[in-house]
Image (tube, rainbow over all chains, first blue to last red):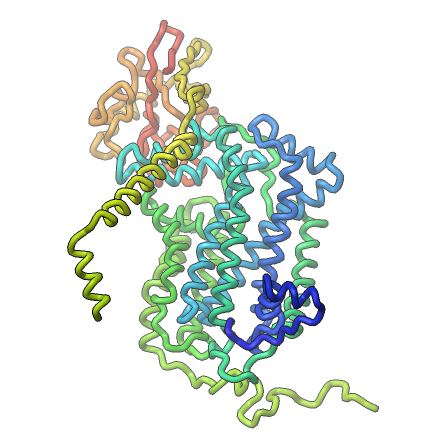
Length: 427
Length: 196
């Protein structure tokens, strides 16, 4: 799709001069103005734009916070309070950054769920999908290190627990895991040294994410967007130019998203956080109940569901790394679950499992919570490793429309599902 | 076809240029690896952190059944004055029934069995000194204060992921793989412990 005929025509003398030297406006026009967009994409296809907005918002607010934050064990906690109370509009910028992390993950999980439902990972979009998984991992690393910076009790103990995951290597090569953990910490326990290095990396990684997003969009614009039918664009009538059609849809979705965002920022900025993080870090006392931020709860539930330390860590990491292989685990010839009568049900079971794991991750590891965490963890892996390959083979997909246009307009080429207008135009 | 034949020919007999290319690549590779090492090693514990500090603790105020937590090398150390019943309970357990059969005592070899005497000092069996870090993921187990939940085995209970330790600090139930570590320590006098 990247090779479509661009309608870019430089008019001014400067535009013509630049076009012969660095055709950047030509590229932007081809990729973001008249880029052919499937005419049937729904609102789930606006999440990419929302995510770009989140990344820019996090970087902009983060740069401001870095001007006032002091990355040391003695001062970090107080400097965050200083930002909230003393710095002009510090409360606003800090709230946008803190809530922004949650909004970023909300959008990315919807984005991934859409990709899974409509088969956006299937050929020729495997590389696009894998870059997406890499971005998810980078986001998780960035969010984890960012959460350590306020140096509250949850910050401190989250760092302790998560870095200690690497000590499980000790049960394969004795001593190596401990060495890795001490290398991460820069000491024999989590300390100010650890805080400083996490601060450095937390500032670096968003720019690495921005680079990966560039590759993600490049890969997307080579193969073109998927759509609810999972069919490729075959004729010009299957597509509309990105601007204004897809862009306006993105803008409308963004304004709704920003309303939700603003509601959190202005009314309940701490709703998604944890009160224990307003207690300064104390290396000699673990809070009675440690929980990660909501967006890590499903993985945390998987970790705790397995009674063996090493296997728990392996299960947790493979729950994400397995996504890399989804393009090959799914054996179906049809992309979109819309036309997969059996798989569709398994897909929703998978979503229910992930949500249930999120709930169980927030509960203490005892009694029936452990039992149910094991049930849903088992389904998570069964879905990816058994259901996807087998259902793809045994299922008979329902009849696909011949083209995107047919799906939208019907066989006659006339719009379907359009009755009389609610308020007929009168002249 | 002629060109392919030429390539095959040159591949068979490496010439001077091949040698120079391989030597230059190897030199650059080794140089890059060596230049990388300082950037990796700088993250390891630094000299000031490594300077092994030892601390002395006065244990005379700790009554039977009480415990205190002190900080050593940035880690919490549990010092517990066990009751006779607790010592008896710890001795009653067979090593074969333990999750981790190793004493995990820095003063003893790795293979020493996790019996209660191997986790304490002779003649001071009521005193239990442990690094208070759960061997699962590094939380600090509960059980130091009288009102704490002490788990199913009367020792410590880690609230993070539900590991239960007995009155000798040995893992009995839950995801932790090892017994709580016994740090290097000695009795400097009847009422003073030197850790480190």
